[in-house]
Structure formats: C-alpha cells, structure tokens
Image (cartoon, helix red, strand yellow):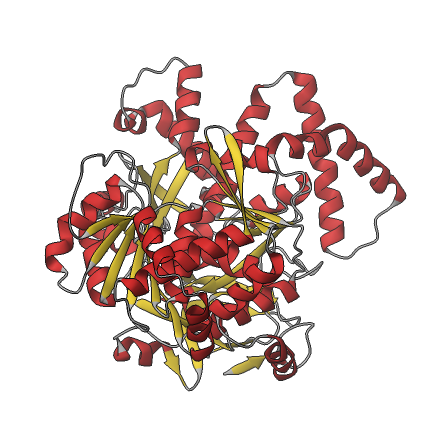
Length: 618
C-alpha cells in the first residue's frame, strides 16, 4: 500500500498530538461546561405559528438534565440504550443529550423507517426507552412493542392528537421532565459525566443498509469531540455562525452539524420546519453554514436554471453574462491564477448587478461555509455554484469515520476531488484502489457484530469500501464504491456513479441507475424529475394524469433522450449510455429501492427491474 500524507498540514502525528491537548473528557462534560459558560446565549431556533423562537444554552441544559434525571428515576442504568425517532426539532436534542447525561447509549432511528426496521434496531440495540416524536411514530412503536421484551417505556415528544389516550407504558416528554424535576440531582449528573471514559461508546448509528440489515456503528465520546474539533481547525467556525438543520439527525453528517460542532464551537442551529418549506426557511434564516446532500444542490440548480429560461430576454441575457464572468473568475481563483484588472472589474459589476441580489433571493448571500457530502456530486454543479459566488466544498467520509475523512480546507478547493484529509487523519490507497483510513475519528466497531468489525478494521485501518486515488498534493478523488464498479464485456473498468451524476445534472432527471457489468454497453434506468417535467409538459399542453402517464409519454421520452445524448457527448465510447428506460414510479424507501439517506440500492433495483434491463439488451 502507498501511504499518502495529509496535504498542507505536516506530519499527521504532530497534528494528532495538538488535537489531543485540546480534546479530553466526554460529551456530557463538555455539554455541562458549555451550558455554564454560554448560559443566556441562543443555542437553537425553531419555528412555531410562523415565528422563530429561541432556545438558550441554559434552556437546552435544563431540558436535557431534566430528561436525564427522569430516566434515572425510571430505573435507567448507565450503559443501557435508549432510541429516538423523529424529525429535527429541539426536543430531539434534549432527549439525545439527556440519554448521554444519564450515562446511556443514544440510538438514532430514521423517521422514515417502517415499523419492522424500527423493531430490528430497537431489538438489536436492546433499547430500554424509545423516544417518539408524535402520534405517527407512536403507532410504529405500539405495533412492534410485543416483539421487544426489553423495551420498558415509550416517551412521546409531541402528544398533540393523543387526548384521552392512556397506556401504562407510554408517557409524554413533559411528564418525563416533571419526573426529572422531582428527582433533580445535577451533582449526580456531574459525577456520572466525570466517571465516564472518553473511550466509552456514546452513540450507535445504524448504517443505511444498502447490502443487508443495518449495522450499529459504535462512536465514542472521543470520536465525536475530536472530529468536531478537527473540522473547525480545517475550516474556521465561530460562535457568530448559524446553521440550518434539515437532514436526518440519525445520519452522522447532520448529527455532527447540529449537535457536536455547535457544542465545540458555539454557533446557533435553526431547525427547518420540514423539507417542503426548506427553501423558504433558507431565505428566512440566511445561514452562514450550509451542509446539503447533492440532491438538494441539484434541485436548487435545476429550479433556478428553468426559472431563468422563463424570464424576459433582457434578464436572461444579464444572468447568462454574469454567470460567464463568475465562472471565469471562479476558475481562475480556484487555479491560483492571477486575475486581470479587466476580469476583476467585470466580476465586480456582475456581483453588484446580478450575482449578489440572486444569492440574497435564494438565501445564500451570507453562506461562507457551504458543503456538499454523503454522495457524489457532478463537478459541473459545483462549478455553477462557484460561478454564482457560493464556494461549495466537498466532504468525504462515512459513519464509521465519525463523518468526515477529507474536506476542502480554507482556499484549497480543487473541483473533482473531495479535498484533503482532516488534520490528524491518515489516508492510504490500497493496491486494489480501496481507500483506507486511520485516526481518532475511526469508530470502535459494530455493535454485537465482531465479524463485520473484523472486516472493517484491519491492522488499525478502516477499510472504507470506496475506491479512489490521491494526487501529489494529497487531494482525494473518489472513483466509486468498490462493489459497484462495472467491468464491461471488453474488460473496461467504468465507474457508474460518474455517469449517473452527469445524467442528474439535467433538470429533468431526478435519479439514474447505470448498469452494464459484463455487458457490451451501458444502459440506464431513469426517474424523471416530476416537478420540472410536469412544468415542461404543461407548457406544451401534453395531457397526463399520473406519474406513470408522464413517464410513458413519447414526447417526454424524446426530451430525456436529448438530455442523455448531451451527456454522452462528454463521455468516452465505453462510458456512454446506449439505451435507457424511464421508470413508471419514483424510488421509495418503503419499496426497498433507496436507503433513508436516499442512496439507491443498486442490487435491489437490478433484481426488481431485471426483465426491463434485459429488454434494453435485446
């Protein structure tokens, strides 16, 4: 294996030593200290009845300690697990931190998980308490509790709609906090926090399960705090920053952004109302930190692209001219090339007349730390945002590495790569191209699964399952998942994710699954973007009533064929998609087609649509 040093940070051991001098103790210790020091500063914001309401660090601390004291009063013991299911809201964090303050393991469950998946995670983690958001999530718990003999209590955060409901196993979060106030013992919580070891497991995060049942990744107190500290060293974070929380808190990326980074660096977190109001909330909050998965960056790009096609000719010309100048300016800056006075002046004019007002309208004008991660994104999309003046950085990592392994740091942004290793993290490329990781961010293993742990952790290195390469400056480029690489009938290696991402740059394509292993050419299963294709069809008076009607329309097929052909022009012959089919439905987690983080389950798709795929090769 070839060792590659962390570019620009010096020796990894030195960086690790520097971080170890800062990061000591447990998450509860840091939390209690933060509550004392920050007191009346605002920690969280949430929207209720159209208005944003603040939650101070003192409020946050009091709520979490009441949850902890309530759990202890119910007989909850250190080392036991408690699970949480629900959408992003302050109460989620109160319960999460309350579990840790009581000495327990916090287990996150995706809000979209069906009852049987909830039962699997609760049973596997041996959770004693299940915090559920509302009536919908309570129904899941009640449906499967008969399979869970170890489950003692179900706590409902928002009991609206449960008037008159009574069950001896169920209580509300307010009732638990009342119990906690009656058993109030902050000194006891301090002792519990000091007694715990930073090497103890703090949280269990269950992987999305693209290749079978989810596995519970064990992340320690040190994993979480060290990684939060390292991220802030790689890209400066400040107490004056603000972030918008909308991705699932059961995913390590959002958990890091909404819980551990604010704990270490002190910035405020705004909770979006829901995904339907996300872009409205973005305009209201105008955060300085914005992490999003590629699908959301792509969606915003496609909406803006289609909108600008519909404005009058003068506005469209001004936008296109400003974007051209912005692209030239951004590419020169990224390459470290000198910027001519003429280009500088043209860019200043484009900023004043078009780009800055447009960013303000989108809610992106204050963003200084924009990040894309959790899945690959096309460089063309990143180039668009840099031209717009939003300097998106890519981050790469996995749950087993506490989130980030590499990220673009400071002004060192190289499109087409996912940045350089975090300070203190080592990355190697194995002979077969697999990315290996070593550092304090690497997890402690899989809960109750020594065989899977032994496969993932070998000789101190985390085997990521991803394939990549590093350049001479230590920038990592991801090729694909190791198991997803296509070898066509002529022995040519092809990365399907690269082709899929290019297809998804089209505003009319929502998802694409490229297939071709041991085949003579590539084919693709494509899911249309319903909103944008619907608008396109209505403008042309094309009749349809359902998603299947729209996908099956011959004119829509011709539209997608043009988009595929445009992508093919930028690909080598073996990478080109020779034939495609439009799926008559969206991909759903409930149907086993995507994970809770919207990653496509390639194997499941291939099996489900095997006849359709075979027809593309006939």
